[in-house]
Amino acid sequence: MQRFRLLAVAAVVAVGLLSVPTGSASADVQVTQQAKLVGQRPVSGRYERSFKNYGAVYTCNDIYVGELCNPLKVYGYRVARGTLRTSLNAYHILDGLKGYDFYLVDVDVDVTDHSGTDRGAWADFYLTTRNATIVDFYDSKSIAAKDDGCHKLRLTLSTPWPFVSAAMDAGSVNFCDSRASLTVSHSGTQGHFHANRLAKINHLTMERVVKVKRGEKPVFRMRTVVPTDSCTGTRTMPLGQVLCSSYDNRTSSVTYSVGTSG
Image (cartoon, one colour):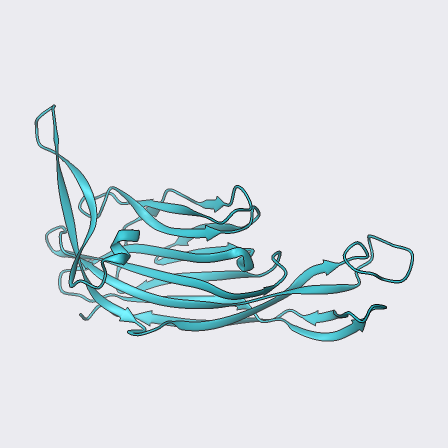
């Protein structure tokens, strides 16, 4: 799927390579499936959404408190901030079953402007479709980082029809923390992606494949939910540090959509 995105500037691009039996025991024929970019939002640039999450704590082991250390006492709360920059691309898969068209939606998210603690922040992504039937299912239900170095892990999905691609990438996550994770679940026409420790994720992508009756045009929607906490009190420490001592848990959601009229 990475080369699918890289070639998206062309009118028609390769989705994947399929191994098609030829009847010969000695070789298979490699067939390149084709797809056409038919929807893009925003056309130029990306949607931006900021997040702010309090919750990780300061103890006396983290700061100078000017008193006997009590490691169980909470002196303040850390904050994780950042920005999600999202784009949506929809593709028409040019091969299919008689009477049906197949489409793929690709959601690409950059996580930028990281600041604050690396232990906080999360995001929920709900990818839905209207007037279409989901035809994929995820082989990967959850992926997590294995170490603290930045590296990419992939989600894979399967479909019952080889022309859609028997096994292809359904997304990827670039983790930079051993405790960061992405979990996937779906119900009906909705896929739910939950990213944990968002402040230590640099990039993620999500894809779905759907079918519609020939000639119909599906619409894809991505609803994003992020924390937007607010500090409600502060505490000044002996060395002048000002810590957030209380906060309100808040969330904010926004919905983006992309059609397939191209």
